[in-house]
Amino acid sequence: MKKILKFSLVLAAIVLTAVQAHAGNADFSLDLIKEEGKTVSFSLKEIKKIDLSIYDTNDSLIYQEKVTSEDNINRTYDLTALPDGIYFLKAESALKISKYKIEVVGNKAKLSTNAISEVYKPVLVNKNGIVALNVLNLEKVPVTVAVYNSDQTEVYKETFAADLHVGKIFDLSSAQKGKYTFEITYNSKTFSETVATK
Image (cartoon, rainbow, N blue to C red):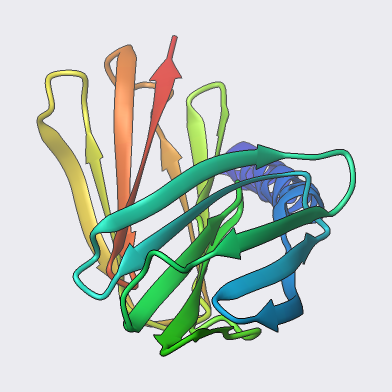
């Protein structure tokens, strides 16, 4: 029992270090540079790689790009082709997904500088079949975790209370060898990651 507890504490420290390193490389903030007519210019700071996309209110994809830069990421979008309405800019890094509102009215476009929603992605660390899961749950909504084996058979499912932080350790070291897919659902999003046991 002491051995498992000690190993769990070591694994928890590894997960915390991974989350902090992840955050340093993947957290970001948006700064509006200028809005002129239907053109908006903005900068994403503290990030070197990000996926950007624009959606309409029906969640239909209008534009998408993957951006990599050695410095801050600067973008200018000409939204002249868009009819009047509400649109959303989604910025997705390795750590989080932020959604910003774009309003197009007449000859003007306005981009919100504050995210209307932010979802931090779950972090999974696999150490010799001991898998640690960490979820930073800013919205404090229930978190559902399901685990599937390589035959896509559900081997575990649990819904956790709406806490700020959800953490769980799974011992797959004595389970059948193969791949296990973790599906973590919260805040209307499902994240999927596969780990292998040897």
